[in-house]
Length: 337
Image 1: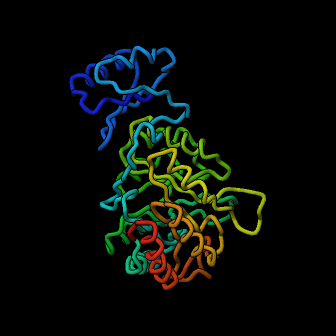
Image 2: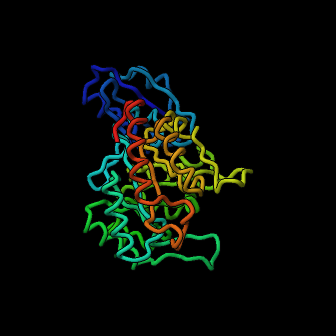
Image 3: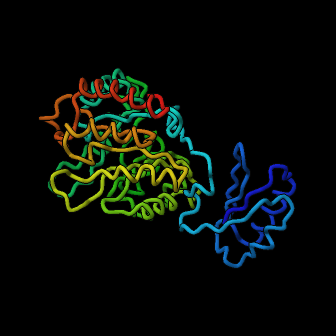
């Protein structure tokens, strides 16, 4: 339920209503914007009489929220959320680019790539230390050693680091060492992991599941936010369809759809969407054109020898050229890069 206040509503009126609702067991999400101030009421609101709430002093209107997601709902938070990740803001006017190798391989490799992408214009470094793979025989990542290599690259370049978590048992280590914790597509509905991440205040990058609907994706975000952590960034990375030519199918329409339904920032991973390096560039451009707040692009200095996903990785020089081309599209849609 959404309670919108009149512009001249006093702090005392808002506080009185908040206390009344909380005494009945409801959780209140307060949002103060330029044009409106409102309460998002979370709980079983079916017992609340809308007509009685409408005559409360200071109340302009009351609306029921039909969607099952509440805190992630734009009705609860009309303004776009801007998430700060190690000093980098995602969701504002500037489109942020996260780049780096699919897998961390050596300290030299990840540091060299970090230096290259920083020169190319990236604002954050991605790299997989823990790798959930379809086959148990595939490279699973360097794990804790990989985290140390990422920290070394951050020390050299100053770039905030982004990497995927797979287990709740690693949360304490990730909170200490990682700037943006990624929840991969396979863990989008690992609800116990989501709830534990919700108890932290660390920014979370939540990838869309392999065949998840938009509502399921937003409900996964709701799991994190319901525990108190509202620093959630959504990532569209392609979904499974009947098409086999590409690795996945990038759902470009999901970007404006989510931006309409939710206040959370949306970034796009064109690398995993296509699985083909030569498609990364046009898909990245399409994502910027339809309103993405950021991009997640795989870059490797020697894709042919990569331990994981070399086929979808750009070389540093191609990445730098793409960044230059994206600036023109960003300007057209009123954004910066």
